[in-house]
Each structure stands twice: as structure tokens, then as C-alpha cells.
Image 1 (spheres, rainbow, N blue to C red):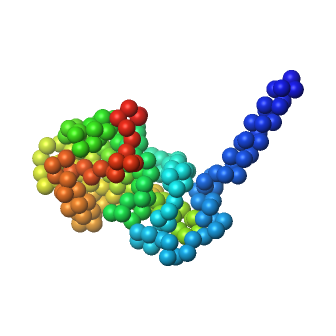
Image 2 (cartoon, rainbow, N blue to C red; image 1 turned 60 degrees about the horizontal axis):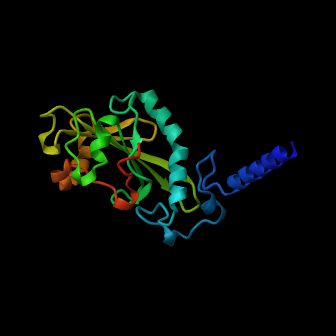
Image 3 (cartoon, helix red, strand yellow; image 1 turned 90 degrees about the horizontal axis):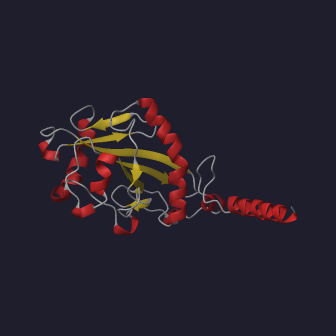
Length: 218
């Protein structure tokens, strides 16, 4: 009995220690290290934020902290490209220079297997959807869920200039900001122009190799 209490006490102590070292505040998703000691403005990167030196553990902790709220927002909106699908992570969180913020890439089952083959992958099937979630972090560690980018493969002939991809941009609350071939087309046309650089690999711009999920991860 004493041994059991001993191990229980050690477990409780370890849990408390883990809480003390938690990368983010679970209630606000604020980065604990920066909340305690904000960085100078000169250390900020991208579009004035986020700090370029967040650790991998901090990035992943923020992404995980924001996920439930983003899931609930999109479920309430009911967009066909996102609701009712199971998305698996295709990357770790990483700081994307092209977007000036932190991103994490996800894909649904119709897109995941081909996406995980990266540059060697085949054309993704109709209905396949890839999502990029993003967030920004201020110098004092405050976190802002930011835009969600989506690519949905449509029927042949939908958009020959975009390899039949529908590009869409959403606000963090799930509201549609714009979509190619629909409302707000002009505001998201830049997505097509950027991804056209990857025309030979199905318009897919892959994350740096260091942040990719291996093919066996689901």
C-alpha cells in the first residue's frame, strides 16, 4: 500500500512539473515562455509576427490548443469541403515564409495517400481536400488563430487553369472569405497564381522535408 501511495505521489509530482513546463496556457493558448519574457520587436519575423524562434514543441502545442475551437467553428458553418471529413496531419507545425505565419497541413482520406508521396505522388482524386491552418504569435506570446486555406479537387473541367482545384480561404470562425469560381474569386486568385509554379506536381507546394509526416503516419 505504501508503495502504491509512493508511486501515486511521484506521478502527481511529475504531472505538476509537466504543467509548470507546459509550452502554452491551455485556456488562452498563449506561449508561456514569451508571456514571461516578451521578445524585442527586432526578433519578430514574417509580416511583423510571429517570432521566428518558437520551438517545435511550442508550435505544436499552439496548434493543438487552437484545434478544438477551429473544429467547432467549421462544424457550425457547414462548408462542404470541410465538414464531415476526417483530416490527418501531413506536416508538423512550421513557420512558412510564403505566408508570414505558422502553418500546419492536413488532408482528408481521398488526398492523404497521394499527398504523403510528395513529389512522387499521383494526381489527387476528385473530392480530395487539403487544408492549411495558420496562426500568428505576438512578441508577448499572445496567439491569434488566423486564416484557413483549402484546396478541393473538383470534377474535370471545373478550372483547367488550376488543374481543377477549387481554392478557398476562410476566417478563423469558419466564414468563407473567398473561393475560386465563386464569391470573392478575385481575393483568392493569388492562390492559383502561386500554386501554378508546381504545375508539374498537381499544383501542390509541399512543406520542407524536415516538417513532413512520413508515409506510415496516419
